[in-house]
Every structure is written in C-alpha cells, then in structure tokens.
Length: 510
Image 1 (cartoon, helix red, strand yellow):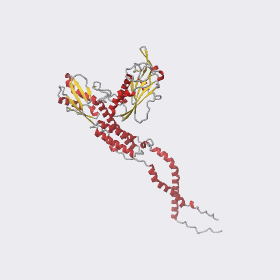
Image 2 (tube, one colour):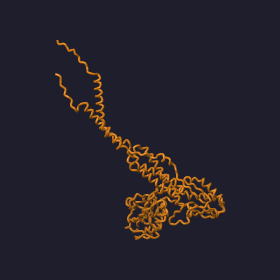
Image 3 (cartoon, one colour):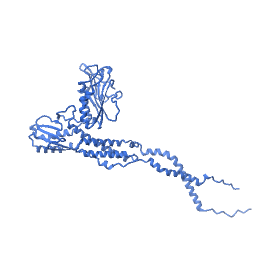
Image 4 (cartoon, one colour):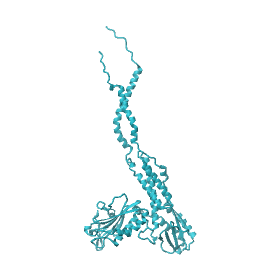
C-alpha cells in the first residue's frame, strides 16, 4: 500500500515563503532613500578658482617721498634722479611691496619728507620728516646716502635677525597684558608686599599702548604673589668678596616654574603676554644673569619668545618693602616697555638714525608705519595659506563635510582679502583691518567643528564599522534568495517538459 503524503501547511507553500523573502527586500528598497538622506554628507562647493587666483598676490603700498634740497648746494633735479635710480635698483622695496616715488614736490600729510642740508650729524627723525646732513666733501654720494637711509627706515625688517624674528608674537587684534610682582619667598626677606602699578603704567606704558592702538586692543591685569620658588638652584658666584648667584643661559629657558606660579588670573580667549618682576629671596640675593663664560651681564632682564618678559629686581636694601614705587618701579616698567615693543615686532631705528622727540612711547611714525605694513602683509599671506589648506584638505578627504557656514566663511575671507588689496594703496591701516579679518575668518573656517569631525575618520574605518553589522543580515537573505531562484528555475523546467508517459505493459504472471 502506497504511503499517503501529508498535505503542505499554508506557511510552507512556495508562494508564502517567497512572499516573506520579497517583503524583506521591499523594506530594504523602501528604506534606501531614508538611509541615503540620513547618512549623506553635505559638501557645499567652495570657490576654488578664486582661492587659487589669489595665490602669490601681495599688498602694494605706494609711498611718496618729498625731497627738500633748498638748504643744500646740490641741484634738486639731479639729486632726485640719482635717488630714484638707487631706489629702483634696490630690491628690498619690491620684496616688501613698496613702490617708492621720489620727487621735489611739497610734502602732504601722508607723504614722507627728506630734508637734505650740509653738515656731519646723523639723520634725525621728526614725525614723517627725516633730516639728512651731508658733508660738503661728500656731496657726490649724497644720493646714495639718502637711498640707504630710506631703505633702513622703510624696510627695517629686511635686516632683522632670525632670533629677533622668532620672539615676535603672532598677530592678534587683542592682547591681554599680565603684570606680576613675584616674590620668591616673602617669609625669607627681600620682598615687596605691593607695588604702585597704576602710576607706573600711566607713566611708562600708556603712551606706548595708545600709540599701538591702531594695531591692537589691550587689556591689562596685575597681581602680587608672595611665594614663587624656583624649580632649580642658582649657581653660586664669587664676585670680589661678595657671594652672588647666577642664572646661566640654560637656566633662563626653564626659569618660569609653571607648576607653582599662577601668572594669569582671568579667563579669556585673547593671547596673553606675561611681564614678571621677580624679587629673589635673601638666600639667592643678589641674583644675576651670567653669560656662557660665567661672567655677570650688564642686563638683568630677558625675553622668553612668544611668552613675555622677565626682570630680576635685586633691592638695594634687604628686608620687607611695604610698597614698591618710585624710581625702582619706573626702571622696571621702562624695561617692560622695551620688552613689549620687541614682542609686538616694533622695529628699532637704525643705529645711525635718531629721533628728535622720541618720548616715552618710543615709536616714531616711520617705525609705526613699517609695523602696520608688515602686519598687513603677514595677515594677508596667512589668510591665503589657510584658504589654500582648506581647499586641499576638502579635495583630499572626500567624505569631509562642508556646510554653509564653512562656505560662507571662505567667501567672507576672500571678500576681506579683496578689500585689503584695494585699500592698501590708500591706507595701510585699513588694509591691516581687512587682512586681519580675512585671517580670522579663514582660521574659523579651517577649525570648523563640522569639518574636524571626520578629519581623522577615513573611509576604511566606516567599512570596518558597517561590514560586521550588515554582513550577518545580508548573508541569510541572499542565500534564501538564491535558493528560491534555483527552485523556481527547476519548477519551470519541469513544467516545460510536461507530464511523463506511464508504461501500460505489466509483467506477466507465471
């Protein structure tokens, strides 16, 4: 008797099974737009052509020099032509973006004036005017002397030593100046409990800060600390019959004890320049700075590049001083003024050039103009480099998001650069303002949090995350799909062949 086959259940039918498998793929197909929308990265188109078009573009500063030779026997036309010839052959002016025009016309308020007269004294600067004296026997080289004087005054950074350039801080429109009176150990004697900082600032630093207000906005804070130990032991020196203590050049690099000194009391995003008046304790007093040969130097102050300045104050009398004021404090803040000028990049006058009315500010118009031009050129070049870095970075990392804010900052930076280039011929101060804005906005775009999110997350990392998640789901679905496709093909072949004929002959019975 033939075995009776059981009827197939409803959920075991081929139609139901294939419908279930198809529903999975239908859900995946319908979810693809949502997945694409939620995982897609916004990449706004950046103005790449404008960024690269600005490459190598420099600020141009036309300068007019009015030459006055009325008090000199040298012919005006002749000396003007000779000075022009020397200026045109001097490549330092072109390297700094200066186009100098020398004429005998009357000087205006924005022009520089050179007065040539007989004499032997060094050149004297008074405002935008410089008086150059030429000995009668040297009248033939007057044009060369004038051209050299103009080169040293208009391009003072060309001869700046690398060590001096490295200590200059990066430009910022705002700075915070922190002044600290630091006693090594007030309990051990030789300490000042307070200082007349307001009068010292007003007398020594306020004129300089007001002079530099066209470049920076300063915020001032001050404090007094009564315990600031050194992190090392100064070396003892025998100077005559007295025992002194010395700081070697190596000690100066580690002089600041960051672990125990609190030199900044407020919180701000503005760069901070520190100025410390350090009073050594009685066991380390007097404390001197020594050179590489171990001999005391004439100066007791030093600058830490990009950080600030320190002066070591050895009181003339031992003991506790209630208030540090008067001449000793004025001397300290006069040193702070020089250190601040050096850190901000104020150029020094050439050794053979003197200022008629230098004043407390210590910055002439020639120096201030050169500093403004230098900072404007630096900011413009830095903005260009930053924008090019953004473009290269976005092109290199395909999955880096570029939002509307980044695109807007790049466009604003380019617009500010264009304004800097257009205003430089008429006003170097306005060029500095626009160049500083371009650098600030470009830096904001470069460090945008949305861009930094995937800066260190390459494509390989995404595959490493998604592969284990989807492989376990995809493999069974694909296997079921392949199995059903093969079964369907087999059924089609069976139907195509039709029903098989049954053999009607039966075996004969014996």
